Image 1 (cartoon, rainbow, N blue to C red):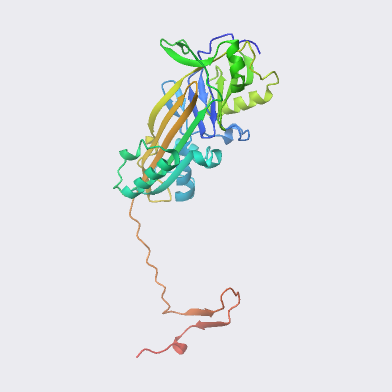
Image 2 (tube, one colour; image 1 turned 45 degrees about the horizontal axis):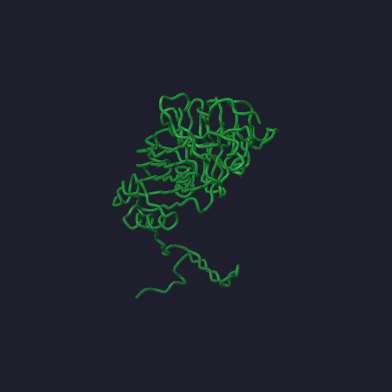
Length: 358
């Protein structure tokens, strides 16, 4: 494979892990995670929502989609729509572009219920036991509100087969400040680290992708492009280009690798969904929150993300009082248990057979 002609200062990375999709993108560069095992889909069948803008970058992680799926399937039991009008975000979330089928059971946690101090403790105990983690958002919520909460956490940690060496800090996409990098810069390093990565394709000095291999079932895909597309189309492009690439996919002695360290710590509030009453229900969404903590370095990476969907009742529903009153004509049927045909039937139309009161 031809030697990289440029520093990978403008590095677009698609990072694929079974935790779901996560992406950072600017006009020429992006980091995107996608699940390799999933069959190739057309763009109209892939949907990542909500996508969050941070400067020129975009990020997406599947946690909020999980809580929305529970709202749609378990609570509303229909696509979620609002009484006061349409929502593009709700429409995209209703597509269920990410589900629990796209992530291993040991990488996510979900729960839902009425917000009480006991329910908070239940969640805290559960995530401590499953992930050895604490929450970044539970303490910010009102646990005496009697609101309804749908909660989820995604947690991933991964290590490369071998640690990559650190490289000298240089600028990213001609930025003013230098950033940290790791990778491969010498032929000796290639001999030591050849099992750490595979080439997916190399079409030009601005169009290539490599896969960093980890000790577990997570993969880190780094994709470089000058395109400015949706995250859905990046996934399609990478799959298509890798499938169509027929040249050598080994990392050769003249090849070099340069990857920036990444650190993200953000909280997102989806106000577009808040203070809106859901059609076909008495629920009003009062809070829609997602957090994201992500790190990528020369040893591996980690992801921790939480999502909370908080709702209150727009009106206290009146509990139906049901009167099973047989003071009017009725039918009496007697049958043996597990038998289909009764052995006695009486159609009671008047008081002839009824015992008189004293």
